[in-house]
Length: 154
Image (cartoon, rainbow, N blue to C red):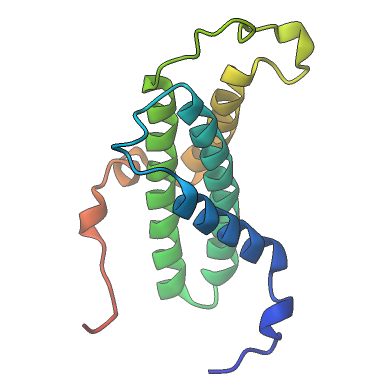
């Protein structure tokens, strides 16, 4: 299978983002050596930002694919929903991790025009949630991931 766009030129920023996530996954310490800490909140915040951006890309792909290819559009819509479920789980995990108690980490909202860093993930999640709820029913959002259909033969 050949591509009309040379691989080196196709979606360089998306390719770089994927490479960055792969690198980060390889460099994380094993869980036994690295118990959950307040610093993991920063990782989850960045991962949540990545997931919400990916969610927007997937939403646009689903919208452009659906009219000419309804089957593929439905699969992308399902992926869109599952990605939102993963994004919501990352957001929930962020709030379950301990907060840093070190000196100098107290919140100073006046220093951040977008609000305190702790609220940035919530603001991003709420904005993405509004977009999700315009296109997805509550029943779709609560459907377990195991009810998907696949067309691949194994």
